[in-house]
Image: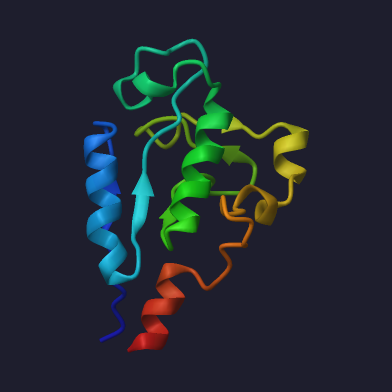
Amino acid sequence: LNTVAFPYWEVWTVPSVELRFFSEVDSVGGGVFVCYPGKAGREAERQNSLLKEFVPMERLKMRWRRARCRGSAFLVVGNGHQRIQNEYFPDTAPLTAEEGSSDPLRAARCLRGRLALGLSLARRRQQAW
């Protein structure tokens, strides 16, 4: 049986569910953290209520960094040309030239200055089996 299993959480209530996600998945080697960065001009989105002063791309980078530094993945870009905005995946935003060419390792740097490198969750799980 070639099955890969890992926790996948959509977080809508921050900070309580976000904190719960990290506390529960840390012990199992991580999971997929999903907290949509939203659309510009729509600051009333509940998952972004504490980060209203930031544009969606900045929210995305902060959450991606936090997930990577804790050993988890963050749902961001599916095809390399567009980034997710909300739970309706076809409603994506194109990456700007700057966003598309930025070094993903730079965006994933941990706060302590170490790179959160490693294999994807799926590859780590496969190797463990």
